[in-house]
Image 1 (tube, rainbow, N blue to C red):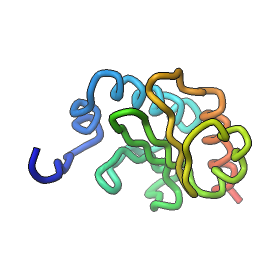
Image 2: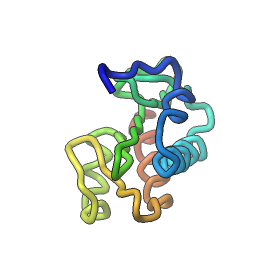
Image 3: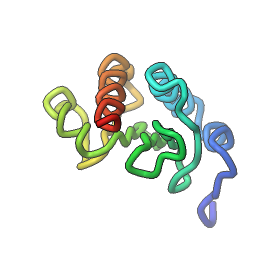
Image 4: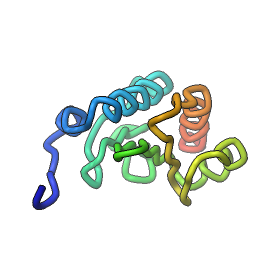
Length: 123
């Protein structure tokens, strides 16, 4: 495949993913919308993002992305710090965590992370 695909919207992004990746991404989306039903869906850096506040900038968004062997959740560095010990079994970076596709998503943990992120935005 030559060149990078630029997606028009989040649904197009989801549809372009292999079945197992799409399923995991939709589960992540479900977790986000369960906590933040008012979240606005958009594309940021060509990946799905959910603005937790109206017209939320990057700092006020949670992003997700699909890869060959994992899905990424980008909740923000402060959230990653808070849940660091609970995320120890996952590969992570300053502002993101990778959930492998061969294991079920830790939905309760993800929901708690999103709730924490929203609480921080309210301060």
